[in-house]
Length: 469
Image 1 (tube, rainbow, N blue to C red):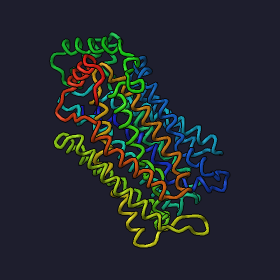
Image 2 (image 1 turned 135 degrees about the horizontal axis):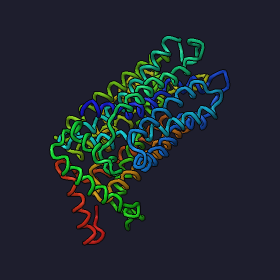
Image 3 (image 1 turned 180 degrees about the horizontal axis):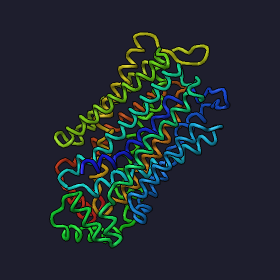
Image 4 (image 1 turned 45 degrees about the horizontal axis):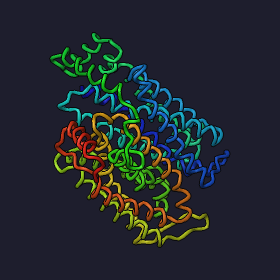
């Protein structure tokens, strides 16, 4: 069971790898002598273009997997990612680079939805939470692997824009992503199909085999009847069920959307997409900047594991509130630090001591507070706060909002940085502060509650009429 879940969570690894691999290549790409001289707006779009594909891939992954199965979608996702890695590495213009990145995003988006869904469908209830958390751990591990490979390749070549094995080093940064894509595709071919999908298609014998051999189900017939009843209920669901009297949606759906938006608007992906640029601004050379990015990603892995261990003991709300306070302070101090920056002849910002050290400490502190709270806990809450009757549709809407917010933040950072890094990090600090009040007044505590309690609360709300959330 653990092996199956780890294999499925490789989709999360691809998610993290794809979104972070651009980090080491972006500066070399922007100034490449072969025609990739990108302006501010185009640079931001080239970095975030994969997120367009991610949003589309995530939106359609569910319906496609219901028709063709979870495993075929995983294999196709791996294939798209493989093609994208090779195509991005061999791109001859920014236009086809963006196209390859979007194709890879389609695969990553599909994998990011299918992997946790598959894990939930094949996991025994007693360990579903722990196995499901492998997805977030896989994402941050993928980020680490991408940043490590970027640092190694740049180190071998000297710099990311220098020749390496017949190509420029930044091209190899993209193409190395083909390795995890190939592994994911081959592993997916050996995974058993989801018993939920098999029951949906009427293949009861195959479903029974998976339930017995993978999940260890004793009363297989009873479990198949339970799955059948759930599927019949899901078929009656519609996005129309999300409608309410709060700007057209139910209040709980808005809570899910805003959780997703705040998770991105604090600027976490700026750290992972542009951290090499950030560290160079505090005085590091490219090699040291890439190494520091790797250390930051290791920190993210460690605090994610800590969050997984604590979430069921401390509770969701208190961890989110502490995270919001910590992010506000660290981002605010970064904004102050960069107000003391100076521009050199090339327009690159540099910081004097002690502000360079303060910015370095605060950036890593920000990652600690985010990784121990808003990083994993938003995914936990999105799986818990919605009633059973609207969970699938509400999750789709909240996930789409997260990709859109991610795209906005990633695309606008170069423009924000051109205005001034003080403005950029002040913007993120402002939303970190807002996130505290949002959690304090609106987000319910779900620790120790059964999912069915959410459905009962929704029934009470419908009987009583609109109530403050």
